Image (cartoon, rainbow, N blue to C red; front, side):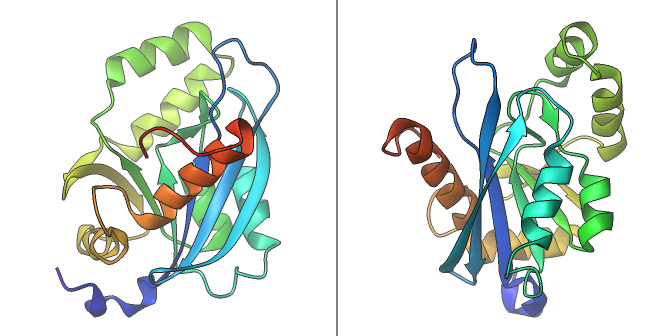
Length: 192
């Protein structure tokens, strides 16, 4: 796929959450890495509620209030849930910012386990599960799995091609992951 066929997907922000221990309570940091093609041009940092329902609102506010909002063409998310089970309402985020959303996961998630956890142990789990059902299953694309709102499979493929330098994870998400880890641990570590 030739990414130059979709020149409007050259400015991207990738969001990931900071690590936390299972017994942690409190806000969870989220980091957005802003890229113009393969050049890091900015970083946004915010906080969401662990297992809450504010992720879409926080991400929308971070982007809308930033100097980057006028240049962005695409939002990438490292998974559909941040801060544990704070499921991002990608439809509301897409509508609010008028930007396509590309959700990327390294592996196909176990949807049965996610459904059981949401419906059995998470406040507001039924609404969160309804969002996941509406979005539909993840699609294999290149060497990852994706969900998308507001862009075609060909555009998603072009974005992955353009922003993945090595490995399987695009640079905006890889960078957001590294920065988020360093905010909590003092240094980045682990696999992106």
